[in-house]
Length: 358
Image (cartoon, rainbow, N blue to C red; front, side, top):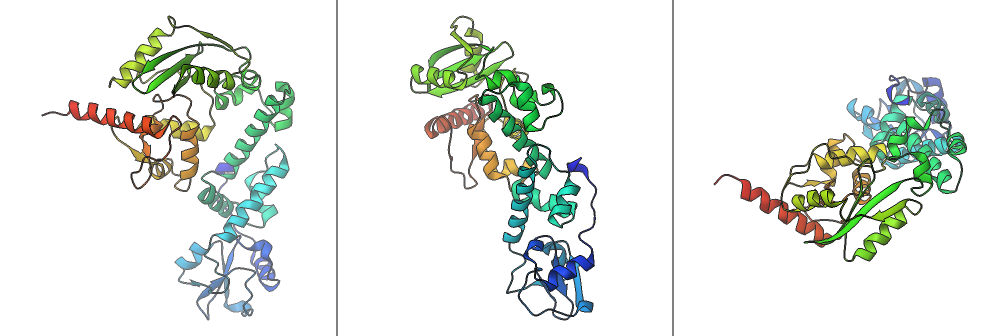
């Protein structure tokens, strides 16, 4: 398994020294070398005069060299992130070139001349995901694209590199692959639109649960968005049958809590689900920053990815992305308009304060 490979060593010292002598840029980001006589560490491609071999020590990364008491070279600046960015970029290129048959972490390290442990650490720090998670996401993207282009599920599975039943990843889509690829073909979606304090709200559900809760300025726009999302689904308006769902949403707008086991039928990547779970854990009346959500997922560099996950939330209020704000407290964006975001937060804070003991 890519994510659980134990730490291994970086390239052997003979290979590292050869890279330093050749000033080989291909090894930048895979290790640094430190010179005992100067107290400085550098990139393999550093243009400075070569030191004596007996004075050189090799480290997997700049952090390790600095912990050993060395300072960065002023010419090649090995502590700057660009060399590591290049390493991650090359790793992504290798994964893409594999075209579905994702290389193991050991195979990636061998091709990039870097220890798998170091590659995993750098990759996750800069992207917020591991190489395996990145490969899985790219494979899922290829699978989705094949389905959208009209390929059969079996062919799409094969071309994307999946070797098991669609049930192994159907949860990532939130619905069956056939339904997704066919624009909702085979799905039966009931919906209703009603006015609310925030304009209009569309509530839609399948037999499995809510698939859309959208806010907007007109019923026509909301209905058009639903059809655009599921162009091949059987969509029908059912004001009576959806009455219970609407009552639940209205009660929530008035301050009532949502059932913790509320069924949802929505598609999402594994990362989006983690973000959405974190959002649902934010108490009513409270807010968190995008950075705080990323940190809670132990992926502090994934702030933008958190924001993207919020932007793709298909069920307004149920997954409360309105409770996520910028680090400085500003509201930031909101799929259904910043004014609605502000109104939702103000309403929740009013309800929370009214419930506090006198």
